Length: 129
Ligand SMILES: [Zn+2]
Image (cartoon, rainbow, N blue to C red; front, side, top):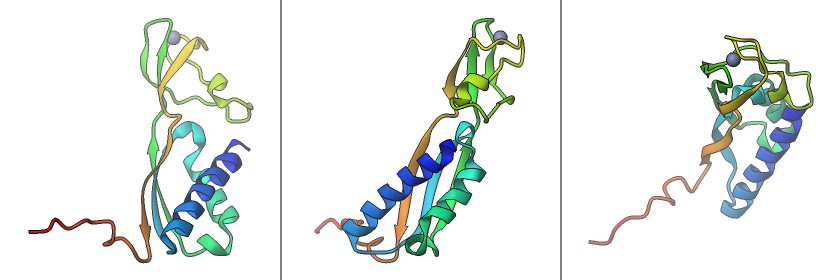
């Protein structure tokens, strides 16, 4: 249920932006590592978003899990046991099957940008001539 925590975290940040700008959030672009299960994350964002975000569109770009292994392998890792409390422990090296791996990407979760009902143009500062 790692994604519930992440979804709550994202929604809190969005709520803050929305309150600061006094505008509804229309669209959010996120980057989420595969370890955060992007499709499940999207469902939770919808579910936990409630009325405030029921018309918000969540676009999620998936970032693949890349690892470096003690055996010398470096690249994408596909096997992932997401039932573990710390999913990164479930990643095995596709070359040697070992777990002595370190992640170089795939754990990120960031809000790239947010489109608000109003204030999109507001953010663009015009230079005076
Ligand atoms: Zn290996």
